[in-house]
Image (tube, rainbow, N blue to C red; front, side):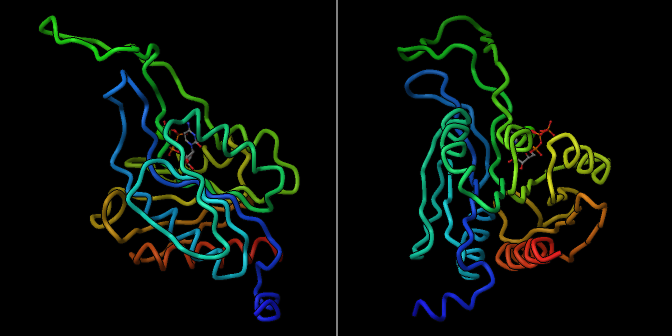
Length: 224
Ligand code: CTP
Ligand code: CA
């Protein structure tokens, strides 16, 4: 079986993937989160492992499951947890693909007891979380770094901006303008943009197909 594995194009490569939402606690029973299902990241993990890669999948809270001998799941809850877990694995990785829908802000203060109902209005002060992808772009050496961009307007421009400011090799633009793309659904319409300014548009496909296409694009860039 090992001989068959050795034939695969990502044999011996380590791939780090983030998936799912993050939950940012407000008090012991409440959090701020988002509707990310984690499906895209889990499909990427499966596609990478099927090419022979050893995968570490850092995932926020999700119902997705995966059983593959080459995939290790590291469950996390908050953006801070995800940042710490990702940094444990980045140096040893060859490829990092950050598909998680990380919260941009978290409650500045987390109450130790359940917050009681009181006035007619209630405000929560938020502070920025760490940008995990950007932090990897700042320290990357041999790694191929891949990010996602979820945009609703000026999509190409915004995605190219993220590619540059986060020092990425490839960004996957997820267009929410198309019905049947994005959160909760099993299809996605994505555009790949490379650091050498190649723009590759893809038709609407299942997330499993998008994951396979993405791995083929990564293989192409690895071998270039
Ligand atoms: N990302 C991350 N850590 C964060 C926020 C985002 O690693 N704290 C990653 C996402 O996983 C994704 C990429 O950065 O790969 C882009 O995420 P996106 O939300 O589209 O962009 P932001 O940089 O957060 O900017 P904005 O939400 O304002 O468009
Ligand atoms: Ca964001």
